[in-house]
Length: 343
Image (cartoon, rainbow, N blue to C red; front, side, top):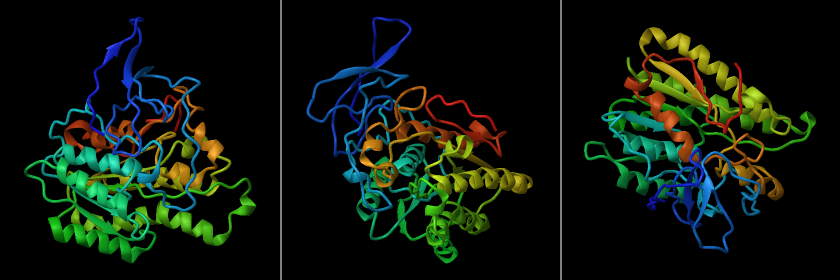
């Protein structure tokens, strides 16, 4: 994924462009603002940084089960860029990221490691083992000399006892937790509310919001003044989504949870914020949507393209870093391709 790229400029002085190299089924260390093109061509082309254009589509694909798998995606998501310049923003910190084996979680783990943090992450055993092993090796290579070895923790975080075990494993290994990123999620399409039965509703809520409560209440025992909690919500919490009703409801709950928890913890000096990504190319997409919807994923936003995890991860670095965001709590950042949201 860390392939070198040379920035070029277009003949128009008002637009910047970057070259796009086509390379699939490999760790995607490409610049954040390139966009996938047809697998059959290996030539380099330039695209505008802001928009994707009408021909920017993903190959048809669908994964039958959740959680999705990053290593089978075409193209694999971009989780890092050679243009990213770390500066020890998280040196000496201990971070725990749920759902860190793929997608946004993987990009966050990698960015945290580059910034000097010791990183632990969770994954679903038996379903995400390869992705987790890939990330573990990635973090070992990215870690700074003073950071401790990363660890991968299996578990279904929809249940309180599993969350307690995950937190205890991190605390026992590193002695504390400075940064908690609640990120694990799942979603399923449905055209009507009648299709959402009780088992599915409970499953989605357990993963998407129960786990945030469980992880937080246990992690707080190992956090102190200066610590940070970052919750992953979604643009759907602000815009709504008729076909992801239960998922959207959980993401709205995460916004409220973030705001209330921030007020609760402000006197302890622990900041709580959120990130509400727009359409980002992660395993959740081919594992959730029909093939025809996957091909045009992300076209609805003003930038006319899906975002990549590497374009979202800096929001988490910013919120985790005390000297960058010490006066920010109870807020949500919106890396969403230009959609204006209020609230």
